[in-house]
Amino acid sequence: MLALNEQRLEDLEKTLKDLGQASFRGRQLFEYFHKQLGKDLDTCSTLPKSLRENLGDLPLKSVDIAHTFASKKDQTKKFLFRLEDQRLIEGVLMKNNYGYSQCISTQVGCRMGCHFCASTKNGLVRNLSPYEMLGQIYETTRRYGKIHSIILMGSGEPLDNLENVLIFMDILNSPLGYPMSYRNMTLSTCGLVPGILQLAHQDRKVNLALSLHSPFQKIREGMMPIAKRYDLKEIFQALDQYTDQLGRRVSYEYTLIDGVNNREEDLEELKKLLKNRLHHLNLIPLNPIDEYGEDRPERAKVLYFKKRCEDMGLNVTIRREQGGDINASCGQLRQKFEEEEGL
Ligand SMILES: C[S@@+](CC[C@H](N)C(=O)[O-])C[C@H]1O[C@@H](n2cnc3c(N)ncnc32)[C@H](O)[C@@H]1O
Ligand code: SF4
Image (cartoon, rainbow, N blue to C red; front, side, top):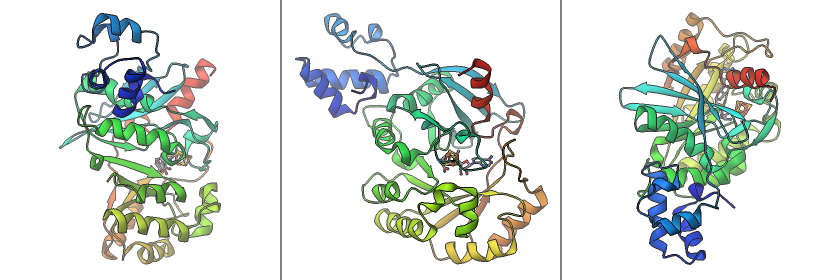
């Protein structure tokens, strides 16, 4: 059973009803957890003391900020959050002109095995529960104020933990809670087709990003083992359904790796794939990790690639390099600290 502070409103009302309480008590408790960001039932003054004591036996989930790394170059902050089993996960908080945007993790580790990604080096440890995702946002909100938008681009593959991710998004979106619009939530996936189709056929209008990395099936397979399971043709069919059903464009993450996916033929093939689709292409220069021998292209090559995409009529940006001095490569910090702690 989910903890009290990670149940959807209707489930929390039912839990309270099963305890012989009126359903409005469930609503009050939901507001306490998700609007007031309360953590300790003793401070929930809307509930009678007897009920608080009664609920005291039921577990609440918690997340703490274990370490904060502040960039000296910009206002970016990187966090290591500690979970109740002492596991660590990473998150990044970025300041934009419209407010804070936060990158959050959805799993401890990842089982997808992309060769360039530090998050997957020790495989998947476990899925995050809904509160372990909410708690990342609530803890930063307590310290820095309201978060405007989130991206599910920390460690983990969100579509490999979709049930909990949907509960998390629904609670965050609830008018009685935080609330954050689905439109301010972006889910990034390596391309798990069943999950993309599930997202296409429901009405939460969240943003979807595909980690594309190569327009060629064989090269993609060489970078991301999961590409062997779902090929580009299947993935694009699913993405087309998402756009048709929800009228939303898809973002494409493209980690630029020198000599691997920044060649002339990559540009031509990208044009064929994206030109006639609603798209936004986001170029991410590789953040090299020890286990992966390939190189990050120098700045001039990144700018050239972007210019060529623009000339071909693609809608393209280079991901803003925020917090470059706090080693923002996903998964590396957690790996370092967990090794030090012998986890
Ligand atoms: C860590 S993943 C998490 C979300 C999801 N699992 C995915 O792959 O889209 C978020 C993004 O970071 C990118 N990424 C991972 N390791 C990277 C690295 N070393 N350098 C640049 N981008 C990287 C991934 O390709 C992906 O687009
Ligand atoms: S890039 Fe995404 S899917 Fe691939 S290993 Fe990293 S977290 Fe997992």
